[in-house]
Image 1 (cartoon, rainbow, N blue to C red):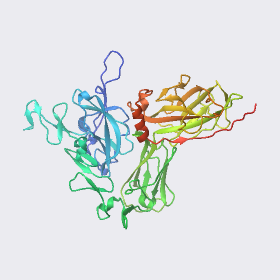
Image 2 (image 1 turned 135 degrees about the horizontal axis):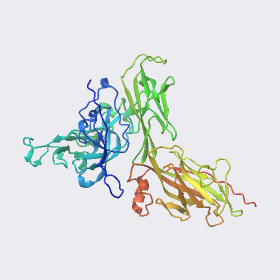
Image 3 (image 1 turned 180 degrees about the vertical axis):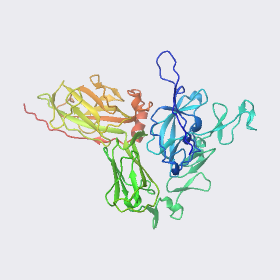
Image 4 (image 1 turned 90 degrees about the horizontal axis):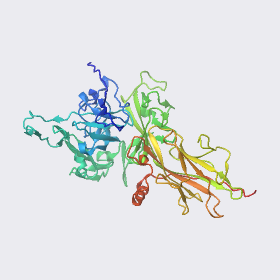
Length: 546
Protein backbone atom coordinates (compact mmCIF):
# COMPACT_ATOMS: atom_id res chain seq x y z
CA UNK A 1 0.00 0.00 0.00
CA UNK A 2 1.31 3.46 -0.88
CA UNK A 3 2.08 5.40 2.30
CA UNK A 4 2.08 9.20 2.53
CA UNK A 5 4.28 11.18 4.90
CA UNK A 6 2.17 14.20 5.80
CA UNK A 7 3.00 17.41 7.59
CA UNK A 8 0.58 19.91 9.12
CA UNK A 9 2.26 23.30 8.88
CA UNK A 10 1.58 26.63 10.55
CA UNK A 11 2.16 29.63 8.29
CA UNK A 12 2.72 32.98 10.04
CA UNK A 13 3.80 36.27 8.53
CA UNK A 14 5.19 38.66 11.17
CA UNK A 15 4.87 42.42 10.65
CA UNK A 16 6.69 44.76 13.00
CA UNK A 17 4.67 47.56 14.50
CA UNK A 18 1.99 48.09 17.08
CA UNK A 19 0.52 44.88 18.59
CA UNK A 20 -2.64 43.67 16.91
CA UNK A 21 -4.46 40.46 16.07
CA UNK A 22 -2.90 38.42 13.28
CA UNK A 23 -4.73 38.31 9.96
CA UNK A 24 -5.90 34.70 9.49
CA UNK A 25 -4.93 34.99 5.81
CA UNK A 26 -1.28 35.07 6.94
CA UNK A 27 -1.54 32.90 10.07
CA UNK A 28 -3.21 29.56 9.42
CA UNK A 29 -2.68 25.82 9.69
CA UNK A 30 -2.48 23.92 6.42
CA UNK A 31 -4.68 20.81 5.99
CA UNK A 32 -3.11 18.79 3.19
CA UNK A 33 -4.04 15.14 3.86
CA UNK A 34 -5.20 13.35 0.66
CA UNK A 35 -7.96 11.46 2.49
CA UNK A 36 -9.73 14.78 3.20
CA UNK A 37 -10.61 15.17 -0.45
CA UNK A 38 -14.19 14.49 -1.53
CA UNK A 39 -12.95 11.98 -4.11
CA UNK A 40 -11.52 9.77 -1.34
CA UNK A 41 -14.11 7.13 -0.47
CA UNK A 42 -13.70 5.40 2.88
CA UNK A 43 -13.08 1.67 2.82
CA UNK A 44 -12.97 -0.22 6.12
CA UNK A 45 -10.41 -2.64 4.66
CA UNK A 46 -7.93 0.27 4.77
CA UNK A 47 -8.34 0.80 8.51
CA UNK A 48 -10.52 2.70 10.96
CA UNK A 49 -12.45 5.85 9.97
CA UNK A 50 -10.70 9.11 10.76
CA UNK A 51 -11.82 11.92 13.07
CA UNK A 52 -10.86 15.61 13.37
CA UNK A 53 -10.26 15.47 17.12
CA UNK A 54 -7.22 17.75 16.78
CA UNK A 55 -9.17 20.55 15.11
CA UNK A 56 -10.07 23.04 17.83
CA UNK A 57 -10.99 26.60 16.86
CA UNK A 58 -7.88 27.60 14.89
CA UNK A 59 -7.73 29.02 11.34
CA UNK A 60 -7.11 26.47 8.60
CA UNK A 61 -6.51 26.41 4.83
CA UNK A 62 -7.00 23.43 2.53
CA UNK A 63 -3.91 22.82 0.40
CA UNK A 64 -2.14 20.12 -1.58
CA UNK A 65 -4.00 16.86 -2.18
CA UNK A 66 -6.72 17.82 0.32
CA UNK A 67 -8.20 20.26 -2.21
CA UNK A 68 -8.65 23.97 -2.83
CA UNK A 69 -11.52 24.75 -0.45
CA UNK A 70 -14.38 23.17 1.47
CA UNK A 71 -17.21 21.77 -0.68
CA UNK A 72 -20.43 23.79 -0.52
CA UNK A 73 -22.64 20.86 -1.47
CA UNK A 74 -23.77 17.69 0.28
CA UNK A 75 -21.09 14.99 0.46
CA UNK A 76 -22.38 11.39 0.76
CA UNK A 77 -21.41 9.46 3.87
CA UNK A 78 -18.25 7.33 3.86
CA UNK A 79 -16.20 9.96 2.02
CA UNK A 80 -13.25 12.13 3.09
CA UNK A 81 -11.77 9.21 5.00
CA UNK A 82 -14.61 8.88 7.51
CA UNK A 83 -18.25 7.95 8.09
CA UNK A 84 -19.70 11.47 8.40
CA UNK A 85 -17.99 14.01 6.09
CA UNK A 86 -18.42 17.71 6.94
CA UNK A 87 -19.25 20.23 4.20
CA UNK A 88 -19.99 23.98 4.09
CA UNK A 89 -23.72 24.71 3.90
CA UNK A 90 -23.47 28.15 2.29
CA UNK A 91 -21.56 30.09 -0.35
CA UNK A 92 -18.00 31.28 0.10
CA UNK A 93 -17.70 35.02 0.86
CA UNK A 94 -16.10 37.71 -1.28
CA UNK A 95 -12.87 39.36 -0.20
CA UNK A 96 -14.70 42.53 0.80
CA UNK A 97 -17.06 40.61 3.11
CA UNK A 98 -14.38 40.03 5.73
CA UNK A 99 -14.96 37.20 8.21
CA UNK A 100 -18.41 35.62 7.87
CA UNK A 101 -20.18 32.79 9.68
CA UNK A 102 -21.48 29.73 7.86
CA UNK A 103 -23.13 26.48 8.88
CA UNK A 104 -21.08 23.30 8.48
CA UNK A 105 -23.03 20.05 8.11
CA UNK A 106 -22.06 16.40 8.60
CA UNK A 107 -23.74 13.84 6.33
CA UNK A 108 -24.76 10.48 7.72
CA UNK A 109 -27.49 7.87 7.36
CA UNK A 110 -29.03 9.58 4.30
CA UNK A 111 -29.29 12.95 6.07
CA UNK A 112 -27.09 15.68 4.58
CA UNK A 113 -27.15 17.69 7.79
CA UNK A 114 -27.61 15.19 10.62
CA UNK A 115 -25.19 17.30 12.74
CA UNK A 116 -24.26 20.92 12.28
CA UNK A 117 -22.00 23.57 13.75
CA UNK A 118 -20.98 27.16 13.01
CA UNK A 119 -17.62 27.97 11.38
CA UNK A 120 -16.03 31.22 10.23
CA UNK A 121 -14.75 31.82 6.68
CA UNK A 122 -12.63 34.55 5.11
CA UNK A 123 -11.68 35.16 1.46
CA UNK A 124 -8.00 36.10 1.20
CA UNK A 125 -6.26 38.39 -1.34
CA UNK A 126 -4.45 35.44 -2.93
CA UNK A 127 -7.75 33.95 -4.14
CA UNK A 128 -7.94 31.30 -1.42
CA UNK A 129 -10.06 30.81 1.71
CA UNK A 130 -9.28 30.22 5.37
CA UNK A 131 -11.67 28.64 7.85
CA UNK A 132 -11.97 28.82 11.62
CA UNK A 133 -13.10 25.27 12.34
CA UNK A 134 -14.63 24.12 15.61
CA UNK A 135 -13.91 20.73 17.13
CA UNK A 136 -16.46 18.20 15.81
CA UNK A 137 -19.16 17.29 18.29
CA UNK A 138 -18.70 13.53 17.77
CA UNK A 139 -16.55 11.07 15.87
CA UNK A 140 -16.41 10.20 13.13
CA UNK A 141 -16.39 13.69 11.57
CA UNK A 142 -13.84 15.10 9.11
CA UNK A 143 -13.81 18.51 7.41
CA UNK A 144 -13.66 17.84 3.66
CA UNK A 145 -11.63 19.57 0.97
CA UNK A 146 -12.53 19.67 -2.71
CA UNK A 147 -10.81 20.30 -6.04
CA UNK A 148 -12.84 22.83 -8.03
CA UNK A 149 -12.66 23.21 -11.81
CA UNK A 150 -10.03 25.65 -13.07
CA UNK A 151 -10.47 27.81 -16.15
CA UNK A 152 -7.27 28.79 -17.98
CA UNK A 153 -6.12 29.82 -21.48
CA UNK A 154 -6.52 26.24 -22.75
CA UNK A 155 -10.09 25.87 -21.58
CA UNK A 156 -11.41 25.03 -25.08
CA UNK A 157 -14.47 27.22 -25.38
CA UNK A 158 -15.06 27.96 -21.71
CA UNK A 159 -13.23 31.30 -21.91
CA UNK A 160 -14.66 34.47 -23.35
CA UNK A 161 -11.09 35.63 -24.05
CA UNK A 162 -7.65 35.00 -22.66
CA UNK A 163 -8.41 37.08 -19.58
CA UNK A 164 -11.97 35.98 -18.81
CA UNK A 165 -13.68 32.71 -17.97
CA UNK A 166 -17.21 31.41 -17.88
CA UNK A 167 -18.36 28.55 -15.67
CA UNK A 168 -20.73 25.70 -16.39
CA UNK A 169 -24.35 25.83 -15.11
CA UNK A 170 -24.58 25.37 -11.37
CA UNK A 171 -21.19 26.99 -10.71
CA UNK A 172 -19.94 30.57 -10.29
CA UNK A 173 -16.55 32.16 -10.88
CA UNK A 174 -14.44 32.56 -7.74
CA UNK A 175 -12.47 35.62 -6.57
CA UNK A 176 -9.31 34.44 -8.34
CA UNK A 177 -11.23 34.73 -11.66
CA UNK A 178 -10.18 31.19 -12.58
CA UNK A 179 -11.82 28.75 -10.17
CA UNK A 180 -15.45 27.71 -10.71
CA UNK A 181 -17.15 27.20 -7.34
CA UNK A 182 -20.43 25.42 -6.79
CA UNK A 183 -23.47 27.70 -6.73
CA UNK A 184 -25.70 27.21 -3.70
CA UNK A 185 -29.19 27.41 -5.18
CA UNK A 186 -30.72 26.90 -1.72
CA UNK A 187 -29.60 30.37 -0.62
CA UNK A 188 -32.09 32.00 -3.00
CA UNK A 189 -35.69 31.55 -1.86
CA UNK A 190 -34.81 28.12 -0.41
CA UNK A 191 -34.41 26.85 -3.97
CA UNK A 192 -38.20 27.09 -4.38
CA UNK A 193 -38.63 24.16 -1.96
CA UNK A 194 -41.55 24.35 0.44
CA UNK A 195 -39.59 22.65 3.27
CA UNK A 196 -36.00 21.41 2.97
CA UNK A 197 -33.50 22.38 0.26
CA UNK A 198 -30.29 20.32 -0.06
CA UNK A 199 -27.48 21.76 -2.16
CA UNK A 200 -25.75 19.21 -4.42
CA UNK A 201 -22.78 19.43 -6.73
CA UNK A 202 -23.85 21.76 -9.56
CA UNK A 203 -27.49 21.17 -8.59
CA UNK A 204 -29.92 20.82 -5.64
CA UNK A 205 -32.94 18.84 -4.52
CA UNK A 206 -36.00 19.39 -2.34
CA UNK A 207 -36.84 17.15 0.60
CA UNK A 208 -39.66 16.87 3.13
CA UNK A 209 -39.82 16.41 6.86
CA UNK A 210 -40.53 13.11 8.58
CA UNK A 211 -43.92 11.69 7.65
CA UNK A 212 -44.22 13.78 4.47
CA UNK A 213 -43.33 13.16 0.81
CA UNK A 214 -42.68 15.30 -2.26
CA UNK A 215 -45.48 16.01 -4.66
CA UNK A 216 -44.98 15.44 -8.38
CA UNK A 217 -43.74 19.03 -8.81
CA UNK A 218 -40.60 18.12 -6.85
CA UNK A 219 -40.97 21.26 -4.74
CA UNK A 220 -43.91 20.98 -2.35
CA UNK A 221 -44.74 18.34 0.27
CA UNK A 222 -47.81 16.45 1.40
CA UNK A 223 -48.63 14.17 4.31
CA UNK A 224 -48.18 10.42 3.94
CA UNK A 225 -51.64 8.88 4.07
CA UNK A 226 -50.79 5.33 5.10
CA UNK A 227 -48.27 2.55 5.52
CA UNK A 228 -48.40 1.70 1.81
CA UNK A 229 -46.44 4.86 0.98
CA UNK A 230 -42.80 4.60 2.09
CA UNK A 231 -43.82 2.65 5.19
CA UNK A 232 -45.66 5.73 6.46
CA UNK A 233 -42.30 7.43 7.05
CA UNK A 234 -41.71 5.04 9.98
CA UNK A 235 -38.16 3.92 10.62
CA UNK A 236 -39.40 0.46 11.74
CA UNK A 237 -42.98 -0.85 11.97
CA UNK A 238 -46.03 0.90 10.53
CA UNK A 239 -49.48 -0.18 11.73
CA UNK A 240 -52.81 0.84 10.19
CA UNK A 241 -55.70 1.79 12.46
CA UNK A 242 -59.21 3.21 12.15
CA UNK A 243 -57.86 6.72 12.69
CA UNK A 244 -55.03 6.32 10.20
CA UNK A 245 -51.67 4.77 11.01
CA UNK A 246 -49.00 4.86 13.67
CA UNK A 247 -45.35 3.93 13.97
CA UNK A 248 -44.11 1.37 16.47
CA UNK A 249 -40.66 0.39 17.66
CA UNK A 250 -39.03 -2.94 18.50
CA UNK A 251 -38.75 -3.83 22.16
CA UNK A 252 -36.20 -1.67 23.93
CA UNK A 253 -36.41 1.27 21.51
CA UNK A 254 -38.62 4.37 21.89
CA UNK A 255 -40.28 6.76 19.47
CA UNK A 256 -38.55 10.10 19.12
CA UNK A 257 -40.34 13.45 19.18
CA UNK A 258 -41.17 13.19 15.46
CA UNK A 259 -43.35 10.09 16.23
CA UNK A 260 -41.79 8.26 13.28
CA UNK A 261 -38.19 7.46 14.20
CA UNK A 262 -37.19 4.80 16.73
CA UNK A 263 -34.21 5.59 18.91
CA UNK A 264 -32.19 4.18 21.77
CA UNK A 265 -33.30 5.53 25.19
CA UNK A 266 -31.00 8.26 26.49
CA UNK A 267 -31.33 9.61 30.04
CA UNK A 268 -29.92 13.12 30.41
CA UNK A 269 -29.01 14.47 33.84
CA UNK A 270 -26.90 17.41 34.86
CA UNK A 271 -24.02 15.21 36.03
CA UNK A 272 -24.50 11.98 34.05
CA UNK A 273 -25.71 10.70 30.70
CA UNK A 274 -26.91 7.10 30.45
CA UNK A 275 -27.52 5.13 27.25
CA UNK A 276 -29.44 1.86 27.44
CA UNK A 277 -29.17 -0.29 24.32
CA UNK A 278 -31.25 -3.50 23.94
CA UNK A 279 -29.04 -6.58 23.88
CA UNK A 280 -30.96 -7.88 20.85
CA UNK A 281 -29.71 -4.87 18.92
CA UNK A 282 -26.12 -5.31 20.10
CA UNK A 283 -25.66 -9.02 19.33
CA UNK A 284 -21.98 -9.93 19.30
CA UNK A 285 -20.76 -6.36 19.15
CA UNK A 286 -18.64 -4.60 21.73
CA UNK A 287 -19.81 -1.04 22.47
CA UNK A 288 -17.62 1.93 23.34
CA UNK A 289 -17.73 5.73 23.20
CA UNK A 290 -15.47 8.25 21.44
CA UNK A 291 -12.93 7.55 24.15
CA UNK A 292 -12.64 3.81 23.57
CA UNK A 293 -11.78 3.14 27.23
CA UNK A 294 -15.44 3.91 28.06
CA UNK A 295 -17.30 0.67 27.29
CA UNK A 296 -20.76 -0.76 27.74
CA UNK A 297 -21.74 -3.09 30.59
CA UNK A 298 -24.42 -5.73 30.04
CA UNK A 299 -27.10 -6.48 32.65
CA UNK A 300 -28.56 -9.39 30.66
CA UNK A 301 -31.27 -7.47 28.77
CA UNK A 302 -29.47 -4.22 27.91
CA UNK A 303 -25.99 -2.86 27.45
CA UNK A 304 -25.66 0.32 29.51
CA UNK A 305 -23.07 3.07 29.09
CA UNK A 306 -22.75 5.74 31.78
CA UNK A 307 -20.66 8.88 31.30
CA UNK A 308 -20.61 12.60 32.11
CA UNK A 309 -20.20 15.93 30.34
CA UNK A 310 -16.47 15.84 31.09
CA UNK A 311 -15.56 12.23 30.31
CA UNK A 312 -15.36 9.69 27.50
CA UNK A 313 -14.74 12.26 24.75
CA UNK A 314 -18.06 14.07 25.26
CA UNK A 315 -18.15 17.35 23.32
CA UNK A 316 -20.18 20.23 24.77
CA UNK A 317 -21.25 23.00 22.39
CA UNK A 318 -23.73 25.87 22.26
CA UNK A 319 -26.23 25.58 19.40
CA UNK A 320 -28.88 28.29 19.10
CA UNK A 321 -30.78 28.31 22.42
CA UNK A 322 -29.39 25.05 23.80
CA UNK A 323 -26.28 23.58 25.38
CA UNK A 324 -25.66 20.35 23.47
CA UNK A 325 -23.57 17.45 24.80
CA UNK A 326 -22.69 14.87 22.14
CA UNK A 327 -20.92 11.55 21.92
CA UNK A 328 -21.00 8.52 19.66
CA UNK A 329 -21.61 4.89 20.61
CA UNK A 330 -19.72 2.59 18.26
CA UNK A 331 -20.21 -1.16 18.09
CA UNK A 332 -17.59 -3.44 16.54
CA UNK A 333 -17.47 -7.27 16.42
CA UNK A 334 -15.93 -8.90 19.49
CA UNK A 335 -12.66 -10.71 18.99
CA UNK A 336 -13.88 -13.67 21.09
CA UNK A 337 -17.35 -14.81 22.25
CA UNK A 338 -18.43 -12.98 25.39
CA UNK A 339 -19.58 -14.43 28.68
CA UNK A 340 -23.16 -13.45 27.79
CA UNK A 341 -23.26 -16.20 25.16
CA UNK A 342 -23.03 -14.02 22.01
CA UNK A 343 -21.59 -16.26 19.29
CA UNK A 344 -23.01 -14.58 16.16
CA UNK A 345 -23.30 -11.02 14.84
CA UNK A 346 -25.94 -9.58 12.51
CA UNK A 347 -24.17 -6.37 11.51
CA UNK A 348 -20.52 -5.42 11.00
CA UNK A 349 -20.77 -2.04 12.74
CA UNK A 350 -23.23 -0.11 14.89
CA UNK A 351 -23.15 3.70 15.15
CA UNK A 352 -25.47 5.47 17.59
CA UNK A 353 -25.14 9.26 17.96
CA UNK A 354 -25.98 10.35 21.52
CA UNK A 355 -27.12 13.92 22.22
CA UNK A 356 -28.36 15.61 25.36
CA UNK A 357 -29.76 19.12 25.23
CA UNK A 358 -29.93 21.60 28.09
CA UNK A 359 -31.44 25.10 28.05
CA UNK A 360 -28.98 27.99 27.85
CA UNK A 361 -30.97 30.38 29.99
CA UNK A 362 -31.67 30.00 33.71
CA UNK A 363 -33.33 32.03 36.41
CA UNK A 364 -31.88 31.05 39.78
CA UNK A 365 -33.52 32.30 42.98
CA UNK A 366 -32.27 32.55 46.54
CA UNK A 367 -33.72 34.32 49.55
CA UNK A 368 -32.67 35.90 52.80
CA UNK A 369 -34.62 37.30 55.77
CA UNK A 370 -33.52 40.48 57.57
CA UNK A 371 -34.25 40.82 61.29
CA UNK A 372 -35.11 44.48 61.86
CA UNK A 373 -34.72 44.44 65.64
CA UNK A 374 -31.23 42.99 65.85
CA UNK A 375 -30.38 44.03 62.27
CA UNK A 376 -29.21 40.48 61.47
CA UNK A 377 -29.66 38.60 58.20
CA UNK A 378 -30.59 34.90 57.91
CA UNK A 379 -30.02 33.27 54.55
CA UNK A 380 -31.80 30.18 53.34
CA UNK A 381 -30.28 27.09 51.74
CA UNK A 382 -29.18 26.84 48.14
CA UNK A 383 -31.19 25.56 45.15
CA UNK A 384 -30.28 23.78 41.91
CA UNK A 385 -31.02 24.16 38.20
CA UNK A 386 -31.47 21.74 35.30
CA UNK A 387 -28.04 22.44 33.83
CA UNK A 388 -25.72 22.21 36.84
CA UNK A 389 -25.81 25.73 38.30
CA UNK A 390 -26.40 26.88 41.88
CA UNK A 391 -26.73 30.25 43.55
CA UNK A 392 -24.40 30.04 46.53
CA UNK A 393 -24.02 32.30 49.58
CA UNK A 394 -20.36 32.49 50.64
CA UNK A 395 -18.74 33.32 53.97
CA UNK A 396 -16.19 35.82 52.65
CA UNK A 397 -14.67 37.44 49.56
CA UNK A 398 -12.52 34.38 48.83
CA UNK A 399 -15.68 32.62 47.53
CA UNK A 400 -14.28 29.25 48.54
CA UNK A 401 -16.50 28.24 51.48
CA UNK A 402 -20.27 28.48 50.98
CA UNK A 403 -22.72 28.17 53.85
CA UNK A 404 -23.81 24.53 53.99
CA UNK A 405 -25.47 23.42 57.22
CA UNK A 406 -25.71 26.39 59.62
CA UNK A 407 -27.48 29.49 58.33
CA UNK A 408 -25.44 32.71 58.55
CA UNK A 409 -26.42 35.73 60.60
CA UNK A 410 -25.47 39.10 59.14
CA UNK A 411 -26.29 42.68 60.04
CA UNK A 412 -27.43 45.53 57.84
CA UNK A 413 -24.43 47.30 56.30
CA UNK A 414 -22.53 44.00 56.39
CA UNK A 415 -21.52 42.50 53.06
CA UNK A 416 -23.40 39.73 51.32
CA UNK A 417 -21.20 37.50 49.12
CA UNK A 418 -23.07 35.46 46.50
CA UNK A 419 -22.17 33.73 43.29
CA UNK A 420 -23.34 31.64 40.35
CA UNK A 421 -21.52 28.29 40.55
CA UNK A 422 -21.43 25.44 38.00
CA UNK A 423 -21.64 21.98 39.54
CA UNK A 424 -19.85 20.57 36.48
CA UNK A 425 -16.85 22.52 35.16
CA UNK A 426 -17.03 22.22 31.36
CA UNK A 427 -14.29 23.61 29.13
CA UNK A 428 -15.25 25.81 26.21
CA UNK A 429 -18.28 27.44 27.85
CA UNK A 430 -18.71 30.78 29.59
CA UNK A 431 -21.63 32.50 31.30
CA UNK A 432 -23.13 35.95 31.52
CA UNK A 433 -25.30 37.13 34.41
CA UNK A 434 -27.82 39.12 32.36
CA UNK A 435 -29.77 40.30 35.38
CA UNK A 436 -30.01 39.96 39.15
CA UNK A 437 -32.86 41.52 41.08
CA UNK A 438 -34.36 41.34 44.54
CA UNK A 439 -38.03 40.94 45.50
CA UNK A 440 -39.82 40.88 48.87
CA UNK A 441 -41.45 37.53 47.99
CA UNK A 442 -40.38 34.39 46.13
CA UNK A 443 -42.44 35.38 43.06
CA UNK A 444 -40.26 36.27 40.11
CA UNK A 445 -43.04 38.43 38.60
CA UNK A 446 -43.38 40.52 41.78
CA UNK A 447 -44.16 44.16 40.90
CA UNK A 448 -41.80 45.46 43.59
CA UNK A 449 -38.26 44.57 42.56
CA UNK A 450 -34.81 46.08 42.90
CA UNK A 451 -32.19 45.45 40.20
CA UNK A 452 -28.56 44.79 41.10
CA UNK A 453 -27.58 43.79 37.55
CA UNK A 454 -29.49 44.57 34.34
CA UNK A 455 -28.62 43.81 30.69
CA UNK A 456 -25.28 42.47 31.92
CA UNK A 457 -24.48 45.83 33.58
CA UNK A 458 -24.18 46.60 37.29
CA UNK A 459 -27.20 48.77 38.18
CA UNK A 460 -26.24 49.47 41.80
CA UNK A 461 -22.84 51.11 42.30
CA UNK A 462 -22.44 49.23 45.58
CA UNK A 463 -22.29 45.90 43.72
CA UNK A 464 -18.77 44.62 43.20
CA UNK A 465 -17.92 41.77 40.81
CA UNK A 466 -14.90 39.54 41.38
CA UNK A 467 -12.90 37.66 38.75
CA UNK A 468 -13.04 33.86 38.74
CA UNK A 469 -10.77 31.17 37.37
CA UNK A 470 -13.81 29.33 36.00
CA UNK A 471 -15.48 31.13 33.07
CA UNK A 472 -18.85 29.72 34.12
CA UNK A 473 -18.66 31.01 37.72
CA UNK A 474 -19.59 34.59 38.66
CA UNK A 475 -18.99 36.16 42.10
CA UNK A 476 -20.49 39.33 43.59
CA UNK A 477 -20.47 41.41 46.78
CA UNK A 478 -23.28 43.75 47.86
CA UNK A 479 -24.17 45.46 51.18
CA UNK A 480 -27.05 43.78 53.01
CA UNK A 481 -30.42 45.51 52.51
CA UNK A 482 -34.17 45.04 52.97
CA UNK A 483 -37.30 46.49 51.37
CA UNK A 484 -39.02 49.47 52.97
CA UNK A 485 -42.15 48.62 54.98
CA UNK A 486 -42.76 46.58 58.12
CA UNK A 487 -44.60 43.90 56.13
CA UNK A 488 -41.56 43.28 53.93
CA UNK A 489 -39.69 40.85 56.16
CA UNK A 490 -38.05 38.77 53.44
CA UNK A 491 -35.78 39.36 50.47
CA UNK A 492 -35.29 37.01 47.52
CA UNK A 493 -32.58 37.18 44.85
CA UNK A 494 -33.26 36.10 41.26
CA UNK A 495 -30.47 35.82 38.69
CA UNK A 496 -30.88 35.25 34.97
CA UNK A 497 -27.87 33.39 33.57
CA UNK A 498 -26.98 32.77 29.92
CA UNK A 499 -24.43 30.19 28.71
CA UNK A 500 -22.37 30.75 25.54
CA UNK A 501 -19.46 29.20 23.69
CA UNK A 502 -16.13 30.82 24.58
CA UNK A 503 -14.94 30.88 20.95
CA UNK A 504 -18.01 32.76 19.72
CA UNK A 505 -16.80 36.37 19.66
CA UNK A 506 -20.26 37.57 18.57
CA UNK A 507 -22.20 35.88 21.37
CA UNK A 508 -24.26 37.75 23.95
CA UNK A 509 -21.74 36.72 26.61
CA UNK A 510 -18.89 38.30 24.64
CA UNK A 511 -20.83 41.58 24.43
CA UNK A 512 -20.98 41.89 28.23
CA UNK A 513 -22.69 45.08 29.41
CA UNK A 514 -25.24 46.08 26.77
CA UNK A 515 -27.42 48.92 28.03
CA UNK A 516 -28.76 49.92 24.62
CA UNK A 517 -30.55 46.66 23.95
CA UNK A 518 -33.87 47.52 22.30
CA UNK A 519 -36.92 46.81 24.37
CA UNK A 520 -38.71 45.13 21.48
CA UNK A 521 -35.73 42.83 20.86
CA UNK A 522 -35.76 41.82 24.50
CA UNK A 523 -39.45 41.04 24.20
CA UNK A 524 -38.85 38.80 21.23
CA UNK A 525 -36.08 36.97 23.07
CA UNK A 526 -38.33 36.33 26.01
CA UNK A 527 -41.09 35.06 23.75
CA UNK A 528 -39.07 32.75 21.51
CA UNK A 529 -35.92 32.07 23.49
CA UNK A 530 -35.10 29.17 25.78
CA UNK A 531 -37.37 28.45 28.69
CA UNK A 532 -36.24 29.84 32.05
CA UNK A 533 -35.84 27.41 34.94
CA UNK A 534 -37.10 28.65 38.32
CA UNK A 535 -35.60 27.52 41.61
CA UNK A 536 -37.15 28.77 44.86
CA UNK A 537 -36.39 27.89 48.47
CA UNK A 538 -37.32 29.06 51.97
CA UNK A 539 -38.30 31.32 53.48
CA UNK A 540 -36.76 31.04 56.92
CA UNK A 541 -38.92 32.17 59.84
CA UNK A 542 -37.85 35.33 61.65
CA UNK A 543 -37.11 35.39 65.36
CA UNK A 544 -38.28 38.78 66.67
CA UNK A 545 -37.03 38.26 70.20
CA UNK A 546 -34.02 40.22 71.45
